[in-house]
Every structure is written in structure tokens, then in C-alpha cells.
Image (cartoon, rainbow, N blue to C red; front, side, top):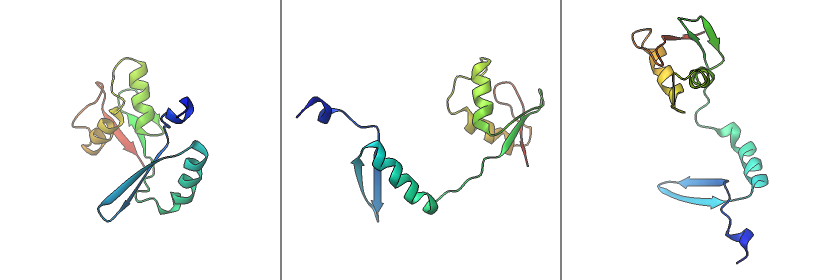
Amino acid sequence: MTQNENKITPYIIRLVENNNSTTYRINQELFLLIKQLVKPYQSFKTIAKKVRCIETNTIFKHAKDANDWLIKIGKSKSSQGDLHIKKVCKQKGIYTYGGYHWEFIE
């Protein structure tokens, strides 16, 4: 086995049929092709909602951008902070994340 064959590719496809799943390691070109082909059949089609930091009145395109801002200013260390921001938005101002109140903008 050559050194290139031993490398682990970061592109992985997992196919699930009934309760059986199979994982495939594939190259980038094939991964991107499959991703494009299956996109119309995506199970969860979520549309990002804008969020607003109430204290600063800053509007972000989506919660991930808001969390990136919190990381930049040192108020968050979590790459999953966008999940917390969404949770705070659903609670309608009762809780905070990163020391700020958040709300969805329709």
C-alpha cells in the first residue's frame, strides 16, 4: 500500500437503508457530485432566520454569524453557540446567551 492510499479522505458518504448503514470514503469530486444530486431530496430544508441582539440592535443574517461575533468579542467560546442563541430566541427574551438577549427577525 502506498502512502497516498493510506491517507484518510475527509469525504465520507453514509447510506442508510432500513436499519442498515454503510459508510464510504470517496474523493472530493465524487462527494460534490453526490451532494449536488441529492440536494433536492434533503430531509430538512431550513431557511436561516435573521437574529437581532436586543442590547446592541445589531441584526445578523443567522445565529451562526451572531455566535461568530460573540467569539470575536470574547463572549463565547462555543462553536455550537448558534444553537444556544436559537434557544434564547424561542424563549422570547427570558434568557440570555453571551450576556445578551436575542430575538428572531421575521
